[in-house]
Image (cartoon, rainbow over all chains, first blue to last red; front, side, top):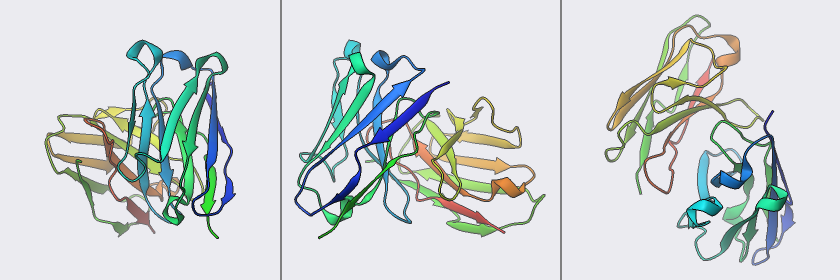
Length: 115
Length: 106
């Protein structure tokens, strides 16, 4: 059974930083292209970015609203993906999901950016 | 970026109804389209991939069709557990944009 567990969310002030983690089990993590998607309270789904697998060069891509502020990385030895979020804005408030495959979603972790 | 537009944004239906949701892409995406269901307080669930392929374990009352720019999700006979919000998503190019969602209510 595939399990995806995100963690690291919380309350942070505007301009602050936060690092989210995502542990995947029951799936071939090393070859997975890890995607982050977010959902603001009461709103729809927004693609944040992704990191390709090692064999594909671990290339990263980002959505325009987060490019230059967010960094996605991975540690294949720990089956873990990360989302480093810097210069946070109130509009980054959302539940953040980590996705190794569109069929497998975690429960998400809530990030609240507020003063 | 490719814009995905769903219609309607919401609809009211009854148990047993046939429901159709449409999704239009702003440019050609071949059959690179997913459909998701999200119940309140839950994570999204993949229903359909590649526009018309039913995800394993998903009820056969869900079906998808279309290619190019116009797509539909059909629920053949609405069940109580189907009251939820549905999203389309293109997987043709990055960013992998989603539609704004269609809320199916009683």
